[in-house]
Image (cartoon, rainbow, N blue to C red; front, top):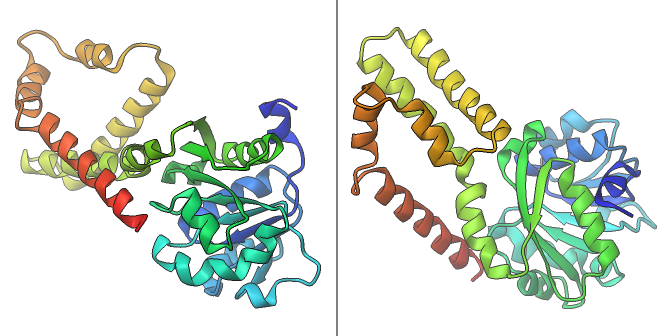
Length: 276
């Protein structure tokens, strides 16, 4: 079965553990793809209210429906909660369910150990544009994951955007730093553009609209273009013009190039630290 065919097929029974922003975005994507049997373990009722009547909600593992056997267990809890939360799902994982973990920093072997050792784990790092089905996810299939389980993980992740697979799990840490945290860096750019516009005398409402639309429109152009990003930048930059003057400041060795390099390195280190 091709990836496209898998994505369009009705999804099998699913168990979602954690329904925060990312868990909720994934759940909405699955429901749009035709998921008919989803059980959500989430102690905070407010988080699952948007899905009322469409999924079964349980406060904890002890209240799961009798006889429920999910094809996949999706772990969307905070990594700091993993050690306490995961062992309760060990029996389901040991019975052959795929485990798809989106917990930052937690390795496939670490997740499997918390589930009792027999779990087949796919580790993935999506990002928040998943909320509008424009996410980007990198995934890694751990030991023992079968081709059909990888196809299922791919179907679950393509419901929220584009998916890429890596063969080296260590690459998930810089992926976390770049695409996982990337939306925050882009939002910071919009925030700083807005502030700078106000500093130059533009009305706050206009500054906000201009900054947000400039970032969003540039992203749309980038997505639609086959040109290298450096060429797209050059296309905006007239010799001896205003943009060139701004870029001289931003592209100075101690400005954006150094700041971005150090930022991604710091985030990558933190991802590795979370593995324990």
